[in-house]
Amino acid sequence: MGKHYSRAAAMRPGDNAAQCLKSVVVRRDAYDWEEDSPIHRPFSKTVIYEMHVGGFTQHPNSGLPDHLRGTYRGLVEKIPYLKSLGITAVELLPVQYFDPQDARPGLTNYWGYSPLAFFAPYSGYSSASDPIGVLNEFKDMVKALHRAGIEVILDVVFNHSAEGDQHGPIFSFKGLENSVYYILDPVAMTYKNYSGCGNTLKTNHGIVQRLVLDCLRYWVSEMHIDGFRFDLASVFSRGETGQILKNPPILWAIEFEPVLAGVKLIAEAWDAGGLYQVGSFVGERFTEWNGRYRDDVRRFVKGDDGVIESFASRILASPDIYRQPDREPNRSIHFITCHDGFTLNDLVSYNEKNNYNNNEDNRDGANDNYSWNCGVEGDTDDPEINELRLRQIKNFFTILFMSQGTPMILMGDEVRRSQKGNNNAYCQNNELSWFNWDSVTKEADLLRFVTGLIHFIQDRAIFEIEQLLHIGFDEKQPSIVWHGAELEQPDWGYFSHSLAFTLYHPKPQEEYLHVICNAYWEPIVFALPELPSPWRWHRIVDTYLSSPYDFSPPETAAYVASDRYRVMARSTIVLMALQR
Image (cartoon, one colour):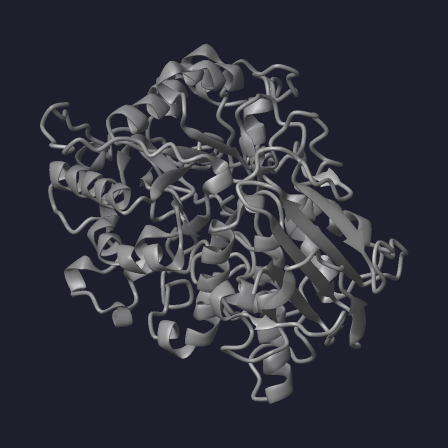
């Protein structure tokens, strides 16, 4: 979500005619899509990269000419990077036209969570100067991504608008029919703020529902978008006075809309008013950002007590949260970090947020981050701490990709992008937020590790199943067996900080994987399961080792000769059974 302050605007009747919003009529047949069509890749085969269109190529070291930096065309130039990484879908922070001025004086609205025009792509991300050129450049980007086999998911904001609260400007809805478009307090007639951004759209009013559906249909049919991530989607569960609805009309209308058949639907299943619906969001097609996955994996890796059972459930795609027996595990979107919060590098480098450059006296942004700085706050020259931080980053990536569910990573985490502890960089349109392309070389070892992991899981059937794993070994179906230091003796105790598990898939050819997670601050020796001949364990990942030994593809993986493996402190191991 976008955590903005509400900008007051001094408005006088009739003083903005020259600057008011205009519309452009576009011919539907004026663009040649060249037989472009939706990819419709299942969630079970999807790896999502959450990214900012402008920030991806805005940095001066992006290698692009100035007129392409921060643009849709600039993103096209970097598609080979995404393809090499193994990304199958980009999730773009808001590109629907937004108010870039919705921030404190001297700052800009970088994230884009302040929509002005729901049907128009943001012109600030275009190298073109005319409206039709902006539209065509956006379509060129979508077409190019599709040619590379990459889906395009839009982060859409239907929970609030740029008009803010009673002190905000009037752009459209306030002047058309204020009480239809916004949830108002019935007595004071002020704006109810379930979005945290000043106002809340009344999405279950028939007029607003039609606006939302028309908009979604437009982006799919005319712009060839593959999916949507709905910001603060629990607002859709609120009625016309803000009450919680059991069966919100807007959600079922989206579910059953024919134009949206096959389109990815992802809900951020909470809002700023305290409604939290992870595991209970209405609908059969919606996937959800699993915020519990983020929190419990963070707590396990940093070494918190009392999280081992929750951690195990997150690896299984959270059957304790998603209790529907027929629910696919990949309907749970797993992430460690996203735009809203610390980057992965900062998660292991800061105990406290550092948002002072947002000019809000560090009051903004989340206070509970489950982060650990590994002993020193912020940047350090201490080699031991830097080594531990890198290992923790590799632990997070390994656990993410060894979990059942759909993985999502944040732009730049694969090369240790840092925001210097800022966990709410919505207003930082500068090098603090941009992708630093020098890091591709500087952090080449980590990039190699992450790339290897992504391609590894894409070649394993166990990570593409569409049913929950069977608990206990079963030679006829995908299954998981839990272990501790000794086989089949997991320690579920309050002070447990380690867990091992064996994954098995019978078809099309047998797969055996053994994963050991040691979040304890001392080494632990783990027994390894016995394999049927001629299978033998080989090491794919050991996060304690330096590159290139931290990750090895199956064809070069080293044979593990012993029936026990000494797992070093705060390390993660992945072994694979091979017949050689």
